[in-house]
Amino acid sequence: MLFNTLRYAEFFAAVFVGSWALVRYAGAWPRLVFLLLVSYGFYAAWDWRYLPLIFASSTVDFLLARAIAREERPRARRAMLIATVALNLGFLGFFKYWNFALENAAALRALLTGEPASVGHAFRVLLPPVGISFFTFESMSYVVDVYRGELPPHKSYLRYLLFVAFFPHLVAGPIVRPRDLLPQFERAPSLTLEEGGEGLFLVAIGLVKKVVLSDQLALNLVDRVFERPENYSALEVLAGVYGYAAQIYCDFSGYTDIAIGSALLLGVRFPKNFDAPYKAHNLADFWRRWHISLSTWLRDYLYIPLGGNRGSELATYRNLMITMLLGGLWHGASWNFVFWGFLHGLGLAVTRAFQRAVQRRRSAGEGERGAATAGSPLSRVPLRALCVLLTFHYVCFAWIFFRVPTFSHAVLILRQIGTLTTFHPNLPPVLVALLGVALLSHYVPERLYERARGAFIAAPAPVQGALLFLVAIGLHEAASAAAVPFVYFQF
Image (cartoon, rainbow, N blue to C red; front, side):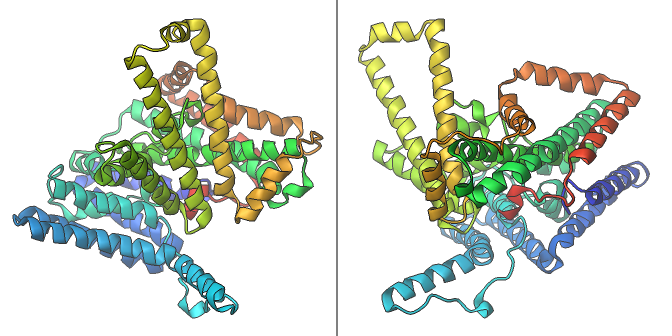
């Protein structure tokens, strides 16, 4: 049930009316039951066969967290923590990476024996459960937080099941922390006019990002260029790479806007997940802005437990690399994703090394004249702009390996860019304008966005309705014949 379909609009309208009607006439508890049932129904609409998996995973983590909280013996607590991590990662590993492991084992066997590499269909997992990467991380983080003493075990089994399965974030995030969502299910639900206006605004913005920008760039530029790069000039292929950077941002941030807006209309607020990532002036800044819920999860539950930056510089670089390699693998069972993670780990390590070198120079009192010059406003702005430009192009370079099916395909794209040809019959002005809007919108001052959002929220209901009607007309005109799935649904 895609967020960008009429079917979801009908589903959400029924859930919205039913949810608030229950609050008014029956109370908060029946509403929680209703939301859990419709969330399970939402998941079953993708593939009902995996519904027991999410229920069983949630139940096991709920019970283990309560057992850990009751247990006082450190070794027993640690054993139960290992059990929950093993179960969650075991589910994730089997359903998402089993086929990948079989293919690599077959390739290794073929390399050693000279026989053809083949894997029987009987041994394959046909289709991994949708959203397993997201709900596994959410549920596992709850048990870890209880083990650390950062969160008391939750008393309500029903609320915990709803925390994991709540449909706006179930399929593709954001990865919501238990400390952020569980307390909201305990409070009496409410929805102000301002929150309702904000929710509608976010849903509309998200649909525009997805349908008008992301889908049009994908169908008319990105998919064509990445499928047959040899048929395009260097300029067109480069535009395709820029187009993918814009597409994946508009697609995923658009999904997140719809998810946050949908939850807000049901009286639940999710954390922010994107903050104009292509404005980043280095890779560390990029990861503070891109998929914030994942980057903070990896920081808190992987990078810091590995040692973070508390050890030697070499250990810190190792921890950065392990975190990003596993972050790449989290996105999909392919060596392309692992290499994408490697590129970001390498970039973060280089960024840190450069920053440390600058700090040492400053602490030693060297380069005072250069520091004074760099401190002037006239020199700071071009330097920061150059850093933003370099960071953006490094991120785009890494996106190539994220998007292509094979490494040889990536080489083909880079080789085609290297031809430096500039003819561009496949870049009509409308397409260039869409690409420009998708990328340059990052650099619109935040206050202008806030002013537009505030104006919509403050507008009377008839004005809001008229604006949403105009948006609906635009979406209808821009929509393709069939709804295009969101990019992150595959992860």
